[in-house]
Amino acid sequence: MRTIEILEADITTLAVDAIVNAANETLLGGGGVDGAIHRAAGRDLLAACRALPEVRPGVRCPTGEARLTPGFRLPARLVIHTVGPVWRGGDAGEAELLARCYRESLQLAAKHELHSIAFPAISCGVYGYPIDAAAAIAWREVRDWPRPLPERVIFCCFGARIAAAYRALAGRGDKHS
Ligand code: APR
Image (cartoon, rainbow, N blue to C red; front, top):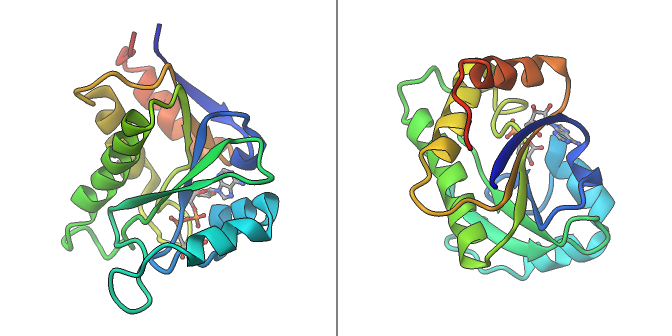
């Protein structure tokens, strides 16, 4: 039985196979959920990220892609780092790039046979993506994922506004068995 859960929580507290980090292309940490994950994971996470190869100067994970590291001191075993698009008004391919973040993360989860994964609302903070549009993309990509999902997929919402966006989608009878 696969479930999609909407939780209001701090993602760094979730004991799941992998939490997804809304990172930047350097993978060297930042604010928001990225900062929270690095603080909770400890310095080894930064070292593991720094050890990932640059695909071009200063870029370890291009926007829309995902990379995997251990979770170190986090209760989560692994961290999937993905980089969402900066919102630039909607005509710069942001929707497809955001969708790719979810697909690439689910691809890594499938490759590593993960049983549980938690997503923050990627790009909905510093990167300014409109919350309802971003949640709809996240929901659609999980719902339409063509391969078996992890048994538990969690949308981890930091605050009621984000949770309301996901609950509105779930409330549309758009349940996932
Ligand atoms: N647990 C769950 N969600 C969180 C947490 C947390 N501890 N902290 C923040 N969030 C939420 C935010 O409220 C927002 O809904 O994560 C969502 C994504 O916001 P950001 O963390 O700002 O990420 P994003 O908008 O993708 O911007 C990424 O911010 O921190 C930097 O290095 C990061 O440059 C990158 C940029």
